[in-house]
Amino acid sequence: MQVVKTKNQLRTILDAERSKGCSVGLVPTMGALHRGHISLVERCVQENDFSVCSVFVNPTQFNDKDDLIKYPRRPEKDAEVLQKAGCSLLFMPDEQEMYPEKDTRLFYFGPLEEVMEGVYRKGHFNGVAQIVSKLFEAVQPGKAYFGQKDFQQLLIVRKMVEQLNMKVQIVSCPIVREESGLAMSSRNELLTAEQKRKAALISKYLFESLTFVSKKRPAEIKEFVVNGVNAEPMLRLDYFEIVNGTTLQSIQEWTDSACVVGCIAVYCGSVRLIDNIVYKNAD
Ligand code: AMP
Image 1: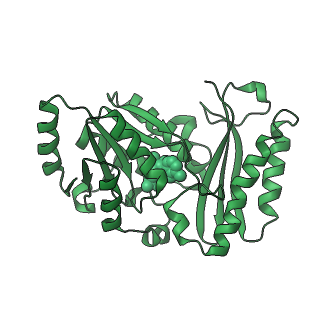
Image 2 (image 1 turned 90 degrees about the horizontal axis):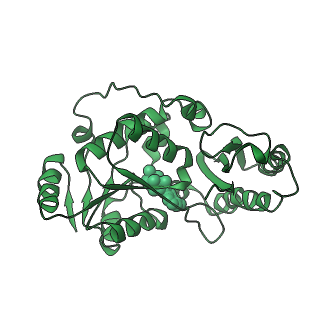
Image 3 (image 1 turned 60 degrees about the vertical axis):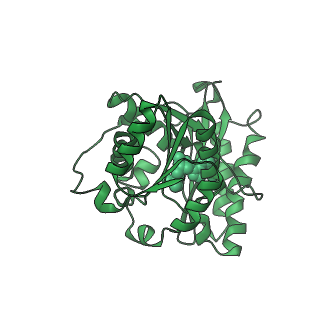
C-alpha cells in the first residue's frame, strides 16, 4: 500500500492507474479506523481495481472545538489495518494541503439540512460538503463509499453530487455494530467501560422499537425510545426523529412514506453518538 500526503503525488499515481484502464474507488474517513470503516474499504477493494482511503480529521465540519481536539488520531495503526484490508493507497493530507486558503464556499441542501444534525450541529454539513467535494476533486473516483450510520450525511453527499453534477457513484454500506449492538464509531474509544455499557442501550431501544412497528403508531414508538433514553442518567438525548428516509422530514403515519428511518443522537458523558434504524425500506 502506498501512503501519500499531497494531492500532486496522488494525482500522478492515479493518472498512471487510470491510463492502464483501472477503476478507482474512494473511502473518505477521519481515521481511528474500526471494523465499520474496514467494511467500506473491503467493499471498495472488491468493486474497484484501485482503492483509495483518505484519513483526514476535517476541522471545518466540527462545530465544537473540544470535539475536534479530543477526536482520536492514530495514523500508524490506521495504515496497518488498511494494508491488511487490501487498500491500494492511503491519502493522509494535512490541513494546509486540503485548505491552503480558507474555504468560503457555502452549500445549501434545502430541507435535508434543516433537520436533525443540521439543527444540532450548525455548519456541520457545509464542512462535510467542503471536504468531500475536495476529496472527490482530488481522487476523481468512479465510486465512493459511505456508511448508513451517518444516514443524513449519506443523503447530503448524494444531493451534493447531484447539485455539482459530479460523475461519482455513491455506494451506501450497512452499519457495523459491536457485539453489544452499539454502532461502531471512532468516538466510542472516548467512552469509559461503564459509559460503553450504557451507550449500548441506544441501539437496544432502537431494536426493541422495531418489534412494535406493526402495533404502534410512530408517535408511540418515538415516546418509547425517548423515555427509555431519558430514564438513563448517563445518557442525554439530542433528538430522536422518525423520518421519511428520502426527504428526512418527520412522518406521522407509517403509510406516509415507503422508506422510514428512526434517527437518534445522544450524549454519553461528553461524547456525542448517533445511530439509526430502518423501520421500513423501499427496496
Ligand atoms: P468517519 O471516519 O466517522 O467520518 O466515517 C467515515 C465513513 O465510515 C463514513 O461514511 C461513515 O458513515 C462510515 N462509518 C463510520 N462508522 C460506521 C459503522 N459503524 N458502520 C458502517 N459505516 C461506518
